[in-house]
Length: 120
Image 1 (cartoon, one colour):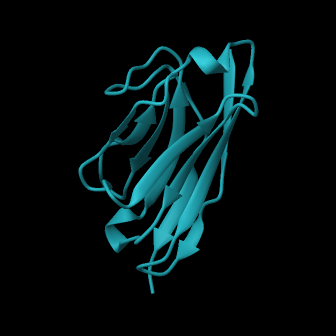
Image 2 (cartoon, helix red, strand yellow):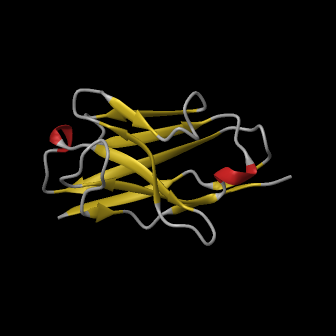
């Protein structure tokens, strides 16, 4: 079983930045897992934002390429999402994910989510 706890959400103005962090715990070898960030906006389906492999390969949604950066620290068992040039359409509940997924699809473990609201 893996537990994921996200932090860093909040209210940010358009054009601003925010850094989300996810801490993993539980009986697993973190360094062997693909980690990812997904989001679900109001009235929308959950979608992939960014994923990172054990070797550091990444995959980004087209809508966030060039603005968001995913990174991981295997020693600390954390995965971060640096979000720059935020837009109102980035407003969503952001979830951390892992557990058997790939760079294109989610694993079976989800965090509780952290809300990001982009508004002036």
